[in-house]
Image (cartoon, rainbow, N blue to C red; front, side, top):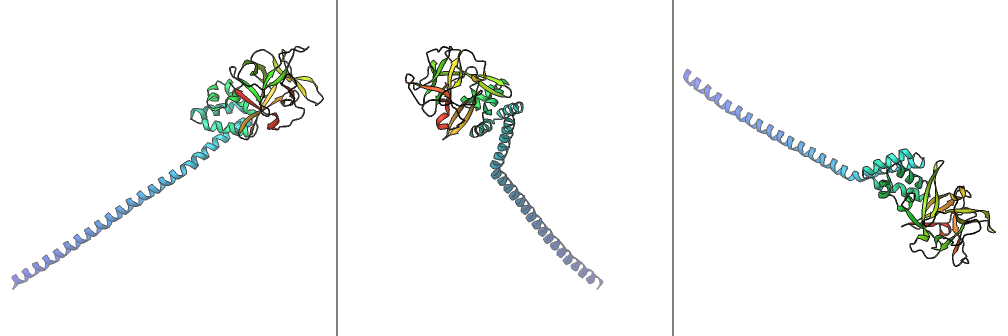
Length: 300
């Protein structure tokens, strides 16, 4: 009887053990399934987040770069218009070295659009600082006329006549400035712009390439209150100095040429009575009309 009781107890214990093992196995499997699902879900979530972040970065990259470029453009522009040329030169060289020629070009376009003659001051300061290579890469040729080997034709916008001079010498040894309808390249209509830094800005003396005589306005006014333009051997007065101011008109880059002494714009008269040429004058009023008084500076 006692033996039967022992056998029965052993059977009960065996069944219980099997039940516990099965339950434990089921629980482990459940845990593994849950953990596995959790890990997969977490990885997928991180992966999705990373993809969204990357997409956002990519989509925002262009506006960000545009913003940075505009900041750099404004910085250079502000240096120039504040006449902080040392800083402007340093900043320009840095931009060029970083491949920022397009930013420099944008600044120059802004100065053109605003009619700022300071663009010539900036170009000159950059060249004398030893960075002429930047100007040659990023600047229009017309604002490099201060360079010693840059020559140009000067052609009136209204009439298409080229700036030249008379073969006749008057009693003072001067020659009249004339407008020639023949604008083909030749020495008679090719000019050299000689730079002078006076005070805080750049002025030019203008001389024909063929001879060492310099553009000036005469002392007296005519019946229209204009000053006649000449070239002369002497060049020691303010009547021989000129500033050049850009103007954008109908998509064209043009320039006013302004006398320092009288603050008058260089122009051609409308008459061709002087052997078929037009006569050069300083206009009596500051009439900034590009159709009448602006010029092309055509570097050759």
